[in-house]
Image 1 (cartoon, each protein chain N blue to C red):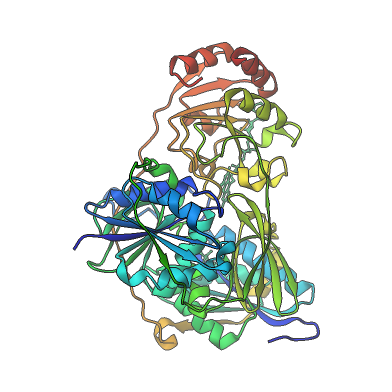
Image 2 (spheres, rainbow over the protein chains, first blue to last red; image 1 turned 90 degrees about the vertical axis):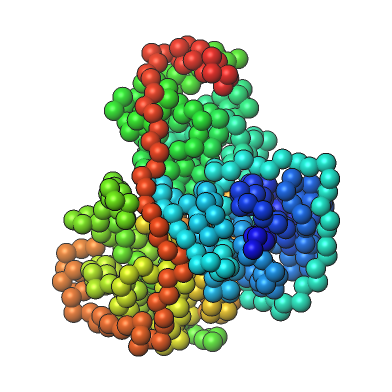
Length: 315
Length: 257
Ligand SMILES: Cc1cc2nc3c(=O)[nH]c(=O)nc-3n(C[C@H](O)[C@H](O)[C@H](O)COP(=O)(O)OP(=O)(O)OC[C@H]3O[C@@H](n4cnc5c(N)ncnc54)[C@H](O)[C@@H]3O)c2cc1C
Ligand SMILES: Nc1ncnc2c1ncn2[C@@H]1O[C@H](COP(=O)(O)O)[C@@H](O)[C@H]1O
């Protein structure tokens, strides 16, 4: 029996998040998989059309409902569960959206969830990191059991676009939707910089930056390089950078071409977030800092002198 | 369900998991059967300490009468329940269970405790730092058919509802959930207190009840077989450059700038 995969799309109402294309790549590593994408939205047409153009997607299911205006796990989960019968695997991205939602779906189904899938060995065997990436575990589900999964973003390339669009089906939402959970607001810091999770270059700052003001030298360099800016937990906790910039075990797990860690010591929890970066550069005044153990290029010195020098050299 | 006067709620239930301390360097056993845990320091999962701290603060504000901590696991877990009592929890429930406890099993056991204890608020960590599953809170909320507010960095209680600020990938999201509800904690919700020595002594006298999965009527089903543990691929240690110019040159040569 070949795998029938349903991917739960992530989007902001207008644009499909690149995380969905990564889920498609993950699903495609299941040989012979039939792949459908579910788009839950208040008006799903635009996003469904984008999902339909991802290579490997055979069908898009559009679930239109006013309650889908905001992605509330408690509201979305029963709609996906209502479709689950037809599928062997239900996948979502391992982003805060996907992690929140997929486990609720798994709970409603009583199905096992494989979190942070980094590799698929067969329809029942999956690889995933545990202990902040310090061990890799292979798990196996029973033959024929329905499996829920979240897909680790740094492990898969986004599926390419396709010239042919897959058919889009409207699916009536008949599941009763709870009203016990209500969206109030979201404070998304709109930034012109590239998105941290998909940027090819990322410059991150740690506690050593000393203040939100201190971070400005990183923004300035990042703008020269077209880079996104990230931060360590210590920098976020201290209020130097907003929470969505945190990189690491409990922040974002990223895989840029170039990662520059500035004034970051290199705690295990931080390294978890950057292990898949192609090239890591460390700038730290302490030559013994653990970050140098993983850095392709290490530069020992005071960041407040070095960053402006680097900026001049690349200008 | 809508108490009009303070205390707002009778009880808060907090889930506690015993995990390898976050400072321990994890080593995979050579035969791939697991990670080394013999002689390794064990602690309360850091996110659960945050969950407990939040519950204690709510109680200390007079908005709850009692904080109950619960864990599902082998006998050793009682050490972490004692630590939780020392931090300030009033009572502990230990659901004895051996082997691999998947999120679904933990959630089913916690649901049984919820039915017994009738908490208005259940606070768990957003993830256990050993298996990094990040599922139990959502699974529990699904089984209980109640709201979930995951990754909380701020929790405000009103009558019959809670306003929760969540750390999400795009920034901060605020939800309003009716109570009872399940909340899972993120790192910035609070900073857990340190335990003082006299509290450790006092904790020894606090009630700790032991139950079993069987008496709760929960089957310990393992749906995912653990096939193999491996160490992660190691990154090659790179080179030191002497100054900014050498760094920029090296990056340009690699086509990175
Ligand atoms: C459960 C849990 C989850 C966690 N999750 C994360 C996570 O997701 N992400 C994360 O990052 N952390 C996480 N942490 C925290 C982690 O353990 C570290 O505390 C944190 O990463 C340290 O941040 P830092 O490197 O900025 O600060 P520090 O460790 O204080 O390092 C600062 C560095 O700056 C250097 N420095 C100082 N001044 C200068 C200067 N002028 N020029 C150059 N260098 C300078 C110092 O030599 C030092 O190496 C987590 C911790 C726990 C317990
Ligand atoms: N065996 C358990 N006993 C009690 N609480 C648990 C248990 N497993 C998980 N939890 C709670 O659920 C949270 C998330 O765990 P997990 O889904 O395993 O990442 C933890 O932070 C705990 O609060």
